[in-house]
Length: 381
Ligand code: FAS
Ligand code: PHB
Image 1 (cartoon, rainbow, N blue to C red):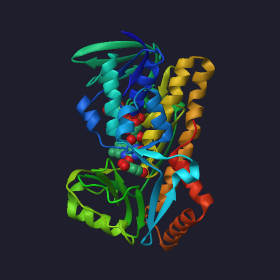
Image 2: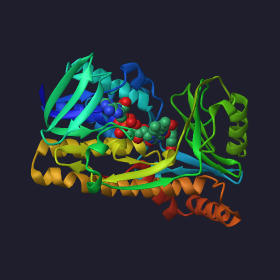
Image 3: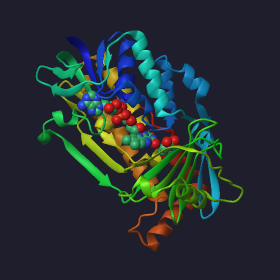
Image 4: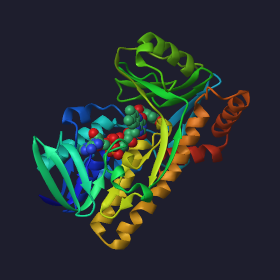
């Protein structure tokens, strides 16, 4: 078989890239090693930057997003028992949209399948050959070779594409954190109409949501912690304690899903090796505190689609550096938000006062609040 672009991974990056290329008449084949149900059910990100929602609309995927997405003009920071609002729209002219990654992926998969363009689930033994170039894989017991002009490595942090670049040609940077997030999806209306990020001496907590009927909440836990040690009652107890502020009451409800997400920062560069282009989590990971992961992946493929459509050596050569400038800005912001809002178990009283001082500064200084807000709502590409 032959195609212009072989796309490995049917997550947000791979699926949006396929859609962006298709609307410009460039054919591609998307290869995914899990089932459609598995990919659609993975609960991950919840916040879409305006650049991401604009891209989805431009790609013809705005209908359900505009019907069901919740536009948020602000966010809240709770510390020392007080809740403070940051008016994102007043500070930046932009807002963010709550629309779960599961819904983005469902919309992208439906559009791809409706178009009849190739999207193969449950492939295995995917091998990248940058010399030919080609992608070899097995599907339904049959061995395939897909000749491509370009290969998009959109296969996430644990995929195979990054490893297809010779180790001597890749530089990686990594930061581990002494905590993780335990997240729950609760069948209860949110107790707030905007996200609440809380720093408490017991640890970080976040009140997010997926709709007006479903809440998504997180608490900071130890990286080696086990979900089995967190019965619902203990999760709610910590959420009540950490989110507490005057006039705020947290409603509980049935917990539909509970999981622990490790936290890491990671970058691999360059994002290009000959005909192979890495995008999204295949190339970088950020702690979810800044709500950047999904949006970085979408921003990468917007740049990659433009480069592949342009097709000039200059455009293709520029891909990696153009993405890395934004990636490193998001790396710093995610690391900074994480440090300000989480309690480091190895930290001391001086660390705790620094974090409180930073929180007081961003909730009192317009300049500091604007800096947080412009990073949170996203960057120009
Ligand atoms: P993805 O990992 O989403 O997709 C890669 C795809 O490639 C997957 O479907 C995988 O099955 C497939 N694949 C892997 N290896 C393959 C192979 N060999 N062959 C074929 N296919 C292969 N971001 C936020 O902004 N906010 C959050 O709250 C947040 N929470 C997260 C929670 C968890 C548990 C995780 C893991 C991530 C979270 N993220 C969050 C980040 C997340 O949203 C990613 O940034 C986003 O999924 C990146 O999209 P992709 O780059 O498409 O990678
Ligand atoms: C979520 O709703 O899953 C979410 C929101 C904001 C974050 C991280 C996760 O910073």
